[in-house]
Every structure is written in C-alpha cells, then in structure tokens.
Amino acid sequence: MFTHLKKTVLSLILICCVCTVCGQRADSLKADLQLLHEKLIAIHPDPYAFVTADRMNSLLDSCYRHIHEDTDDRQFYSMVKVLCSAVRDGHLSTGAAPSFNQFVHKENSYLPLLTYVTADSIFITASVNNTIPAGSLLISVNSHPASVMREMMHNYLMADGYSNTKKDIVLNEIFYFYYYLTYGYSGGFTVVYKDKSGQVKSTALSAVPEHAIKALKIASPQKPLLSFSVTENKTGILTIRTFDLNDLQEANLDYNKFIAQTFRQLKQAGVKKLIIDLRGNGGGRDEYGVTLYRYLTKEKFTYYRYQEKDKKKLSGRPGLGVQQPAALHYDGPVAILTDGGTFSAAAEFCSVAYSHTRAVFFGSETGGRYEGNNSGQMIQVTLPYSKVDLWIPTTKYVMDVRSAQQEGRGIIPGHPVLISVDAYLQQEDVIMEEALQWSASDTAF
Image (cartoon, rainbow, N blue to C red; front, side, top):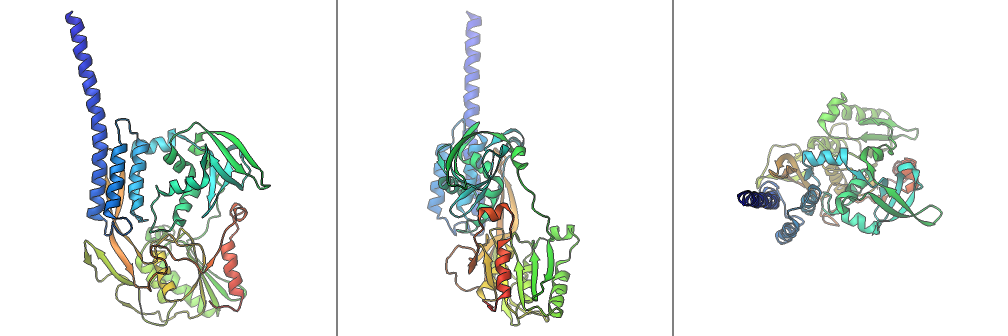
C-alpha cells in the first residue's frame, strides 16, 4: 500500500510539473509578444504611421488568444512576423531563433517549387525533376488559390508603406518558406496549374529539403557593383548596385572617386542622354544619394526636410540644409531604372529626382517609400524566451519633396515595364531595352 501511494504521489508531482512547464511556455510566449510591442513603441520613431494603436492592440489580442501550451516555433514566429508587418516598415526586420533556424534550413522539407510572383499572378519557374513545365501559371496548392496565397504571405513580410514590389522579390527567392510559414508542414502537395498551351493540370509532389529547391536556381551573371559605359549613340549607362560602404570596400571601390570620374568621362564623351540603373540597390550611406543628385542639377537644392531621433530633430548630418550642385554637373535628359529592390538611400535619391522632375522612370515601383523612411541605427532586441531577434530602426527620415500623389507608396515609374514569365526565365533585360529605346528617340521626358 505504501509503495502504491508513493507511486501515486510521484505521478501527481510529475503531472503538476508538466502542467507548470506547459503553462510557463504559453505565458512566456505572451510575455515575449508584450515585450516586442513595448520595444517597438519605445524605439521605433514612428510606429503608428500606418497602423493605429487600436489595430495593433487588436492584433496582439488575437495573437494572445492563439497561444496555447502546444504553440510551436513556426506558429509563434509567424505571429511575430504579422505584428511587425503591420507597422509597414521595410527596415524593421526579424530573425528566427537559432534552434528554429537550424530546423528551417537543415531539417525541414518544403513545397518543391520556385516561383515568379507578379502583381496578379504566380508562375512556376522550376520544380524538382521538372515535374511541372517552367512558365506554367500556378492555380492552387492543396486547394489554396494562388491569389489567396500571395495575399496571406504578404502579411508576414515587412515593406515600406503600401508597396508590395519588395515583398514579391522575397517570394521569388523563398516562396516555399513562406508557404510553410503560412500553412504549416505538409509531406505532400496537390498542385493545380495551367501550362502554356492553356491546359489545366494537376500533379502530386512530395516535400523536399531546402537544398534540393536551391539547386533549381539558375545563377544570374555576376555584375559589377559600379559601372559606366557609353553606347554608340552617346547614351551613358551608369549602374549603381549598392550604396553600402562595406560592400564597396570589399570590392575595392571608392564611390566618390568613381562618381567624379564618371561625370568627367560623361562630359568628355559628349553624352546626350543618361540612364541610371538603380535596380536592386538596397541603399547604404545617405550621402551617396546626395552626391549623385549634386551631379544632376545646376541649382541649389534641399534633400531631407528633416531627420528625427528620440523625438528630437537632428542637425549636421549629410543631406540636411541647402545642398550645392557639383561643378561638373550633367544637364541632359536622365532615365532612372527601378524595381522593388530599390530601397532606403537609393529610393531617397529617386524621390528627390522625381520631385524635381529631373528624370523619367522605367521599371516597377520602388521598395522604398517616396515620402521617406525609418532607418539609421538599428537596435537589436532578442526576445528572452523564444530567442527571436528584432532589428528596430531609430531615425525618421523625411524627404523634402512635393506632396505624394499616392501616400505611402514608392516611386511609381511613368514608364512601367511588365516582365513576362518568358522574359524572366530567359533573364532578358526588358527594362533596359525600353530605356535604350527611349535614349534612341527624340523624347527627353
């Protein structure tokens, strides 16, 4: 009898311990979300620019209700992503906990597809074992319609304002991960698609490790970070892939020296029109955009209206106050090429050029917002229980530009260029082709 009583007591203790641990997990995850909210409000310079306090609190309450003892790492990380996405700030970013990160990249299996996501469609660009013809239109996966999948996945991605082009670029790289984040794990998938002949077909696919999906990618030709050339018809093509100092230093490039040499060469060559390619330029040093615009104007100009940190206006920083034009400036027609990867400092330059009607724009909407952004120093916050990382911007940048036609959007090109799935698969540069046609015409703007 004593032995039986002892076993019963031990069992009760074990049950109590398990319940306590389970309860601790749910409470600890809720505490992490509360800390996330507190840190966002304390650190971010403008957290309620696009979401009201009531809406954010409603999202938090919804997350709290969905946290239970068995809430796993994927479910919690998706909650973090949804809350951060609601702020609509492309500089705000998250990082998975080390253990979950290990699982995601080394242990998990995924939908075995690569995609090309446009504003209204999702195309399949590659599949394991070439099961689905490249260029096919994706209709659904496991009965989830393509349009719904894109909308749902956008809820987990951070971007400036209401621009979605940066989000779609991310999906083109790791659609399979965001499918998993949105819908959870599945060992098999029923994929419905329309091939190029217009036939609707269905096929069954098995989940595969991430490395098998990455092996499907076709490497793009390596392009220099900075380059300048002149065509036979005297069109200058200036390509700037980054404003990031570290990237440029690693490539042994001096940005200011390169820009000065470029505009000297441009003058000597008698360039009639200039194309500036800023696609994929995710930004970097503020002054690099200011410097570039100095070479495109003969007038004094203002760049930033103000910068603000800790509710205080900043002074003495590059781009604040009246800016002087460069002595060797170019006054001819300019075209600027943009896409969703044109972000941060690169988008700031585009805002000023657009506001001053200094250039025509080709391509797609910039990932960076026309009116400005929140960036500067990034504060890292690690949520103590889940170990999820956040990087929160600290400085509000407001551009000195004309009022936006559509608030909260990027720079929308006057010459939008839609890239077909065939052009995407063949890596044809149709945006540059359109710009070169402009350069060969008599049209300045």
